[in-house]
Length: 124
Image (cartoon, rainbow, N blue to C red; front, top):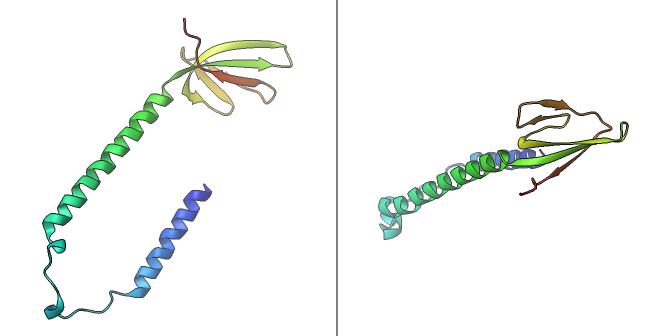
């Protein structure tokens, strides 16, 4: 949360500095050189691959996030009051602060005294 606020403030400060600096001084047309670095083809060769890499990175991040959220983990709930423990299989995305939802669709509400242990499922 703090990072989001700092990034937002940084963007606002950058925008204010950009607006205050103005557009700068205009150059005379006679002094403008027509070098190869200002060609539109060079800009397109840089911009389009950057957009493609950005889109691929975003798709990879979303795919990995979906894959990781749908992993099934083993959750053990230990209750010190009743001296019992129970084990359930739960998807990672279904673990919340006060409630878990098992793979079978059973919703389990947790109290403040219960302790949960999340482990990888035992392979057979």
